[in-house]
Image (cartoon, rainbow, N blue to C red; front, side, top):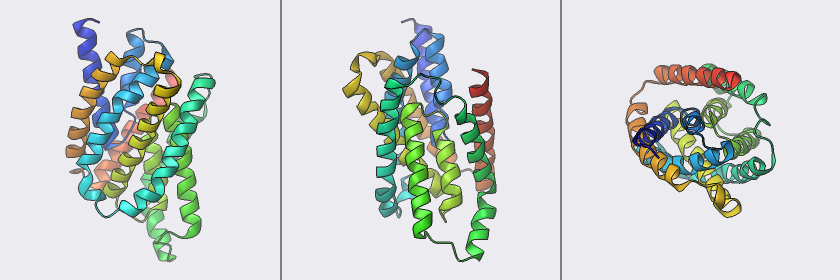
Length: 254
């Protein structure tokens, strides 16, 4: 591995960790870099998932103040992300890599619309005394997070955008708190998928890549939390829309 390759992978990990903490879609940085250097797609995907776990932990730690009152909610939502990511990781090992390429841009577009119109939809719900989680909304929320976990375990690019879109409409919380929950759920999906890969397909893991992305993603997670927590909600929504749009274009052109 050349010095250029080492530097490029570390910087890609740093960028991905930063983007994942603020919004999501960091895989759209690291995955193409790995392919550029000749790594096989499935091996690159698995090694990337493992490498981004430390960045997710760092980003979650950075959002600990927003999360300090949300423990009970995380205990209820976390299992949905966990189960979904196991399903997604197993699907990655048996389905062709193109299985989700048609539907994913549509999912991201819908998620962006939910993020943009989330405040209006929340106000509409509040006027109808739906500013609390009814059983029906809980079911919809858990199902949405389960499906996001499936996607996160399978590939994960823009999983954060999907989670933000789902929770923006269904949770009566501020965007920064929702972003903190997103970091926890996405990290669970990455971690569980990584563990499945380690058990089922350890020969596909490139530990050098995991280490390099991990180092970069830790720094990126800390930077992303520092930047993201200081963004006003309107600016944060704008960042989400920009990155989500780039993700859609990237997926359609590759």
